[in-house]
Length: 225
Image 1 (cartoon, rainbow, N blue to C red):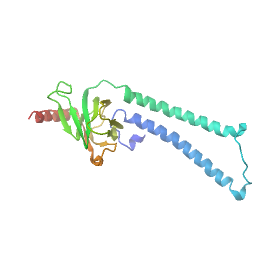
Image 2 (cartoon, rainbow, N blue to C red):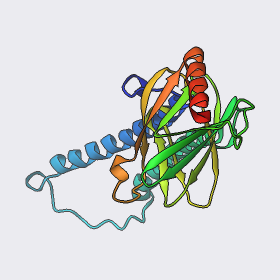
Image 3 (cartoon, rainbow, N blue to C red):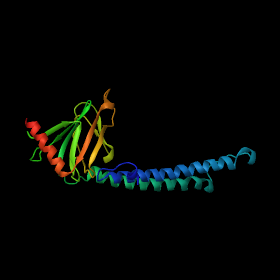
Image 4 (tube, helix red, strand yellow):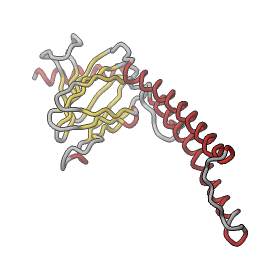
């Protein structure tokens, strides 16, 4: 699996990798096959060993078969890819599981602002914890996120989650993720958003329950102070 090469840290990362693997295998098969046939014909029918080529109109049944059968097989492969892609799309983008917590993510030139809800679990209270360029999450906990942009188009990208979602000015986009591995990971902006785009990076910290509880308690005290 691709996950052995590229680290996976979310509940749906493997599903995304599976779609990529299916595309790579089927696309690679047809690439190797067509290149193999091309080079076979180049060497088998090179000028010094073959008679002069004749014009083929492609109208006879035998000639059409060389087009129709490969064409139909490619369509079958496309249908397989579409089936895998639609299943992943529905599970990740449309069928949102119940949330343990909801956070707000705001992209701006050139930073990410993350807001955690207060002790009541609702965003918009005086106990909200807002932090810039550092997102703390609890492992194996399902989060919904409200993604916004305060200025131009950004793209919230967490490679180990296999997540990339555009942040569009004037819209609030809801998505979800479930971290499955503790550690520190990269957050990027994957949409060119101005001169500081390359520096628009943040850190994702996935913690166990005790460490996260200590961190959020300390941040709430800091916010009150």
